[in-house]
Length: 167
Image (cartoon, rainbow, N blue to C red; front, side, top):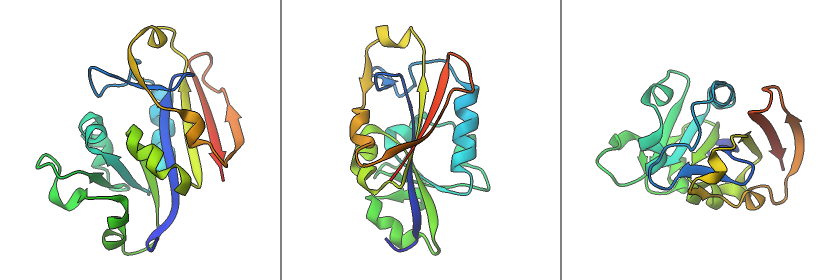
């Protein structure tokens, strides 16, 4: 793809792959500052790509920073026209020099781009409450196919573990 330097998936789930509440677009755990800090560090100076529901759930200050450009795969009038794309291949028309793409969700987009990903940043949120709820689940083994765990850390105690997978 012209204009794309690297593709990275950025996601947070429970250990079992839960990533959102079925009844809403919200994550099934309270705000985790460690995860937000990690998200900011790995997506700075990259182009965020997301689906429509992820766009609705993402706080707009995260999107509207000077060091991040974003695109939403959508036809909705709720998305600024400049930021809309119909599919991931349309990015070739929008990017004028090589950039890192950060695919931040949702499930369909993560699965469609998993084979393109050079890196997967996966934050695991350990929250006992979450596994009792009725969340959506992503088959995380499909995201890591043909990738090796290169770095795993538990710097945030019991609540947060960050794994980095590379091709």
